[in-house]
Image 1 (cartoon, rainbow, N blue to C red):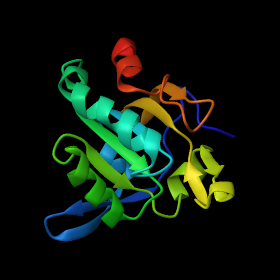
Image 2 (spheres, helix red, strand yellow):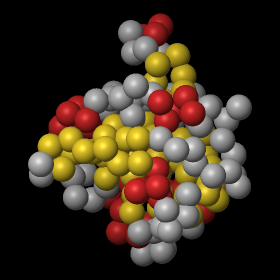
Image 3 (spheres, one colour):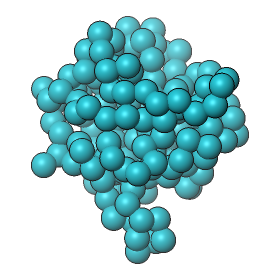
Image 4 (cartoon, rainbow, N blue to C red):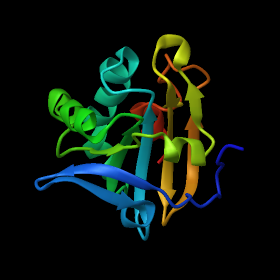
Length: 161
């Protein structure tokens, strides 16, 4: 069953790139006591994710944060090295925090994984965005198709905040 508004995020561990290399960060580390935006992509460097979804959040980050959001996270089922390369290639480094869900553990735990094996992608995350306040989902926007970034895009998020 997919996560819904009012649910607490499950315990999970992401990988993030730091100056000292990859580091583990738990949901408590990232979400406890904070208001954040989390959006998910099926894959770094994939067309909709790379050309549409992520750039919107990079470009609108200051506006989103001006609405009381402490941090913006993007997660994808890619390893931490790919997510780090993607952050640097897109200008997202230092603007958005890139969370690696390399084994899709978080995507599966919240019920928002998808089977991309027909395209050679294996298990991936569905595309979505959410507002999380102190670990609780207060807004959730799940796309009905992986090639869309309408309801989960930055502009839609701005209108919700």
